[in-house]
Amino acid sequence: MKYLIASDIHGSAYYCKLLAECFGNSGAEKLLLLGDLLYHGARNPLPRDYNTLQCAEILNELKTSIVCVKGNCDSEVDQMVLDFPVRADFFLFELGGRAAIATHGHNPPALQNQRDMLFNGHFHVPAFEQREDCLYVNCGSVSIPKENSPHSCILAEGDTLAWIDLETGKIFRKENIAPELVR
Image (cartoon, rainbow, N blue to C red; front, top):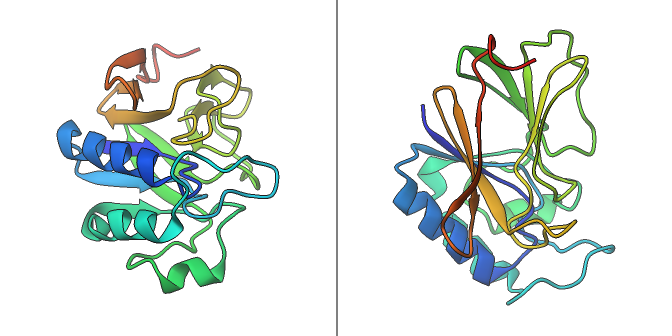
């Protein structure tokens, strides 16, 4: 299965539209959203073209392709305007021969196997690192990137992860996740 993985849209209609276009052009079968879809959060500035209802409309057009987990800025009222489930704490899947868990990142699960992969957003900074308990992957942020990182998402297929700059459409990082290659 080919996934486009993204997090932290935070109500930006501008960047949500870029994400939808990226998904349409990517050939991915599923759009895996790692939370913080509509609300910008009390600690974040308003993102470009902040319009939660327009974001909901854009995402609802993709509802049959979306798998979503709940972020710390998501609430029960968000479900009232979204036509796909947004309340799960995590999503389990397989990628590149590894068990993978997707979560927002504010309540990370305990993992026991270095072969496992943990995907999250929340910190708004792209990352790829082997940790003691798992391979940690952060897709960055769609609308409010931090530490001078680009507005980003990840295209995941087979053994390859490719971080995409949403403004340019170009890949800015690529990693192989084959268990024998990552240490």
